[in-house]
Image 1 (cartoon, one colour):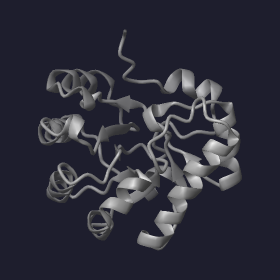
Image 2: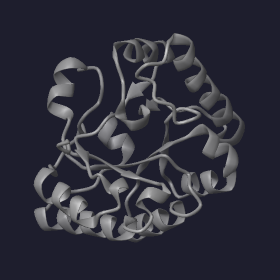
Image 3: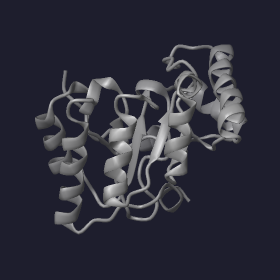
Image 4: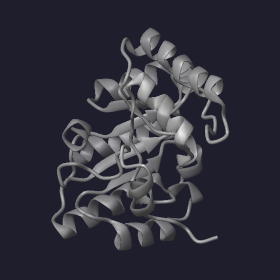
Length: 211
């Protein structure tokens, strides 16, 4: 199966209401699936070193398990998004299933973080027109990506190929805050930052890139 590093071109045609690229010609760095005790602190250390603010799409159940880790990433100035409560594939979920995943996330977000988010990303990037319609009811913006690094395959060569061949000045790049990427996450982020510097690109904050 061919890896799709940049799905934004077909996606933009079918779902123009979704966000596929940064809006200010700066690169937005995003992380899916956290918080995770084995990787979140590594990522936060590197982001502090790079002076970069990222958007973390958190899983509600992980927020519940690791509230202090959630607080740590927010205290560092990063933003969070809704990645469902159970990391459930919503592509074939009915309206009730979608509603439960979003509202259960919102509930734990209110309890632990003290606020909700306006950003959403579906697990595994799977979505359909039903999900698009339901997100509008919640006032959520679906933030997709224009650069999938496939870091979860745990192969730095794949990440290197993705970054060198598909990065653009307005990329929304996705990495993973999970054990799947644990062994290469530090090298992956350093490689990514080096490539941005070489090309004269800039990182942007979530607010800059999405508004």
